[in-house]
Structures are given as structure tokens and as C-alpha cells.
Figure 1 (tube, rainbow, N blue to C red):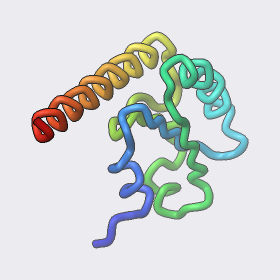
Figure 2 (cartoon, rainbow, N blue to C red):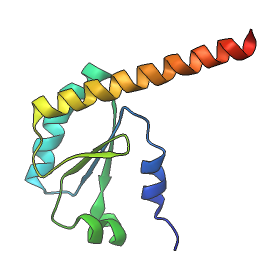
Figure 3 (tube, rainbow, N blue to C red):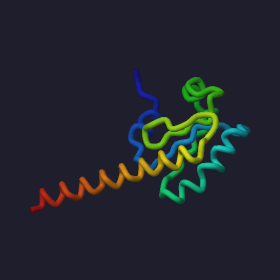
Length: 113
């Protein structure tokens, strides 16, 4: 069975890559995007908005369960966004990314020493 291209993209998402699965005309999706936007800048996160209507597999997968929000490779929310919870999740993702980056720098120094 072949993996869907979106599954491959999501599997390679960085800790601060935020993916929003939505469709045009979805009022909950618009509300989610409005809630997310200020937090993206606050945490240096990048939004990838995916319209599920253009893809039969994603439409079947998410149907009317939109919006669905992922932070990195982890599902963070669906339907409604809790801003306080999302801020905590992004904070944790940022700390994890910083720790991973620091560990890579330490390893690189050890190899170069």
C-alpha cells in the first residue's frame, strides 16, 4: 500500500510546523485559523493549511471532522481550538525543538574535537 503524499509531508514535519486541515466555507476552520495566527508569530511556527476538498483520501479521512490541527506530527486539536492549550502545546514543541538543536550542536562539537 502506497502512503499518501500528505502522510509523507506530515511525517517529516518539524516541531513547529502547524498543519490545519480545513475546507472552504467551514466557519469552524476560519475561527481556528484566526485563533492560530497570533500564536504562529509568538512561537515562530509555520502554518500549512491543507484544503481536504481537493483530495479524495483526505476528504474520506477527515470528512466533517474539520478543522483538524497538527503540531509537528502530533494531532493537537479538532473542531474547536482551545487557545490556552494550543499555547502550551506550542511552548512544549518549541522547547523540544531547542533541546534537539542543542543536542545536535553538542554532538557536532564532540565529533569535531
